[in-house]
Length: 254
Image (cartoon, rainbow, N blue to C red):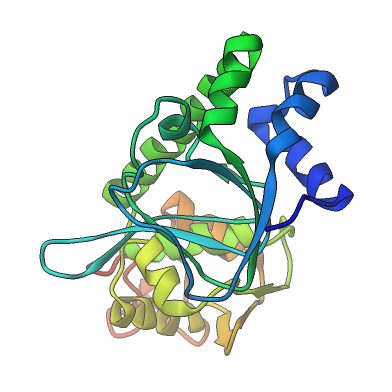
């Protein structure tokens, strides 16, 4: 492990948990920060291990997951550059509630838990910042539960693709950040269900080509998330409605 470089520290200073801290407080908090580099598939921590560090991603992707009693992998979240995790369990001296591993080659900043606790005793504003960040994570998890229960598989995929594109309308090419099996797990779908969703999206001008998704019009995805049915290309009308033969259902079983 090495000390973070200026570029690492700049990314760390911009994460939500540090946004309200004064520069002096941030300098004290980062005094014992160290950088680790992980290869794809490398384990960061295991479920039940003592929470020894708080993490900030400066490059790559980290997968947070649990193993179900049936032996399946349940993906809880996927974190990217500029995101932090394990705040709550770190400053409460808890244990990690899930496992974390690198999806891609990843560079992380870690801050030792005991150092964070010492800083909190000296600067209570750090605790307030971490509580605010924990609250934000909670709201995101609630949104994720709502998405899994209220949206169809098609809507979840469309919502995920929208989150990756800066375009508000018109054509766009979206780079998938990681493999399709992980995308399926993150969206609460089985890989075969995701493949069927991609096949249906192709009829609507959303074409998956290896690790890229070419979209004819981003509005199509926005309409799907809003719950609108989109007419597939080449479909024909029957008494003002889509022919049942060519109608495309929005949802797929997860």
